[in-house]
Amino acid sequence: MSTPRRIARISGISLPSALVLLCGSVVAVPTAAQTTATERAAAAEVIRQIEELQDRLDPEGRAAELVSRSDPARTRLLQEVAALWESDMRHLSDWIGRNPEVGWEERQAVDTLTKVARAHGFDVEVGVAGLETAWVATWVSPAGPEGPTLGLIGEYDALRDIDGPFHGDQHNAQTPVAFSAAFALQELMAGSGVPGRIRVFGTPAEEVGPPAKTIMFDAGVFDGTDILVRSHSAVETSRAGAGFGVCCLNINEVRYTFHGRPAHQLTSWNGRNALSAAVRFYSSVDGLRSTFRPEASIQGVIPEGGVAPNVVPARAVVDYYIRYPDEVYLEHISRMMDDAARGAALATGTEVEIDRYGEYRDGVTLGTLEELYFAHARALGAPKLNEVRQRPAGYEETGWVTRSIPGVGVSVYSSTDTYHTHGMEESAFTSVGHTGFRMDAQIMAAVLHDYLTDEGLRAAVAAEHEVLQGLLSEYHERLREVYAPEIGGSDGSGSTGSGS
Ligand SMILES: [Zn+2]
Image 1: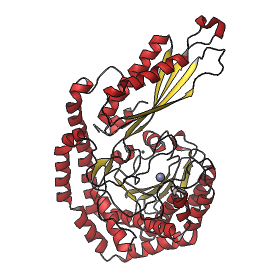
Image 2 (image 1 turned 180 degrees about the vertical axis):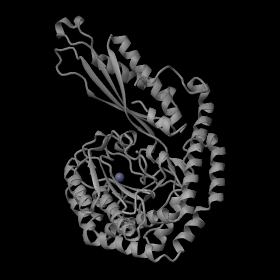
Image 3 (image 1 turned 30 degrees about the horizontal axis):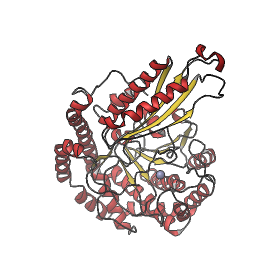
Image 4 (image 1 turned 120 degrees about the horizontal axis):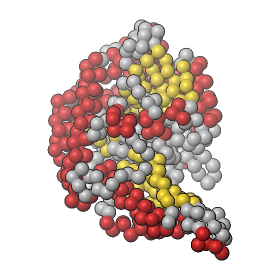
């Protein structure tokens, strides 16, 4: 997959296991995002600068001041969010919960949700970025579009299980939560003549690849959005520290397709065996493992390996998820594996096509917005507050959107059981889930309201985001220097070409 758009936009600058994608709040590890001793050493100077930035911006103090302000309009806004949630959106959440659909097949959910958005005066575009179940709902204030563009992300895909799909990660609630916040803000902006736009992004298939938000980002769907908020189920109410990181390692999803030539078994010399190439490649990767740092996690399957034993297989596919804590070393692993695939093709007289169909990267987490979210959660009396700052991971699982657009993930305690369980699904229908979701919506509305009305907050968010973007690039530069003796060149270019 080529990434010119991302490279151009972010100068220097999600869980998929076989079935389960990533959810930002799965891992609750405090302290810095860096995993290995090498990464921590390379990040030391950057971490010092992040701490300095936090001292300068004082996100906690700013949040405390903003939240303690007497603001009758905000108080009314939060009441309105609660009323919307209790009257309609709670039922919508339950309905999606009782009608689960897996990633890329969420047609009923999309149909229902987009009808609701249209009924509230939003312009809806379905099928954005070429994805059938992705959509964007946009509302422009009657006072004009010149103000900030407030974005809300909503998912709706269910998990796969042998007994059929189920909402074991409570994605059923996400869009009704986003709607409760969006519709209340809409009323406030229209009623008070506040210019700006509200956009709700319907993002499908969080639990399966390829990563929908990356595809939508590359297609420019999020362009022009000033801030993004998203909710997610949670087993406690916590916020992350400022910086960059990812919940479940940086990932390249790569499909290697070997093309050979078919022939009858008894005249196999006329053919070129693609399965032989695939098996050779698969074994080569196992042979490479000892040359990679031990934190690498590389797992592959062979979903296609021919059709009949009496025909030389003309096509075979090997599908890998390649994970490493940082993206610099990850690229090195990918290059070595691509070379191994080409070697296997060369050795068997076949050809290989390399398709990197998914990428997940470290996301950017802003102290200004995390502290504001948490201060509002505290003020609302959110349950199970964990005062320990969690590891930064970005507010959406692919990382790419967070690098380009400031935002925050809001996750109030909503389940008595852990992630991806039938217990978590059940909690979504009880007062535990309903209360958490209502508070998610109120906090999202409050954060967007503060952003809309407080110029100082907008400036602080923009400044923090810009500095962190730069520091992320700097971190990668340091890593390239450190890894240079191993990965072949201070530019990290290693062998030639990405082959994708
Ligand atoms: Zn999730």
